[in-house]
Amino acid sequence: MSLSSSSQNQSSDSHPSTSPPKTVESALDLLRSLQPQLTALCAAGKPGTLQGSLERVGAFESKDGARVLWVSPREDERWPESEEELQERLKLVRVAELVHRAFKDAGYITETRPLKLHCTLINTSYRKPFNRNSQLFSFTDVLASDAILEFQPSEDHAQATSVTPSSVSPSNRTIRVAFGTYDIPEIQLCAMGSSGPDGEYISLGNVRLTASGGGAAV
Image (cartoon, rainbow, N blue to C red):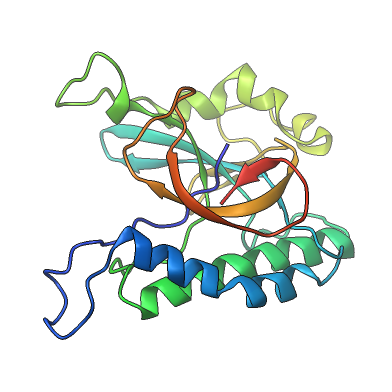
């Protein structure tokens, strides 16, 4: 399982000729150069750990329907959390922002949209057999399903009985869930659009964050 951040521009066409080309090797060098700062950030709170709690389900939608269903850590929702949970969540934010800022400043990331950590659950663009017009789905139906209600925290599950349960954010249509908390042992640079034996992105290299652990990768 992976928490994705941003795609990167590896073409040198959009950069001045005096700039060094953006390659996988140079991107890995930049990622590994961040190791001391990443280690320092991970030493806060629970020493030597980095964790991510999957607490929101949302979709990338258009007026015609949705193509991508995702789950992510919470952002600025005012849901109850302990001080320890808050500090661990902020640690993940700081790590993600450090990497995102470094790659953006170096010209690898040219997108202007904000960083959005998420784990893709469904992407109909990759549905087989391939169709140029990927099949859309109704996120409203997802919100109304018994399946999504089963993953809501107990206090929300008792109240959620319709398509607009109490934990749905009306502004960006996300719903609170409890998909668990996972260790994040490393940050990987992956090839977008690639697919390994289990459908995962193919890793081109990584930097370790913790001495041990399993679960997710950013």
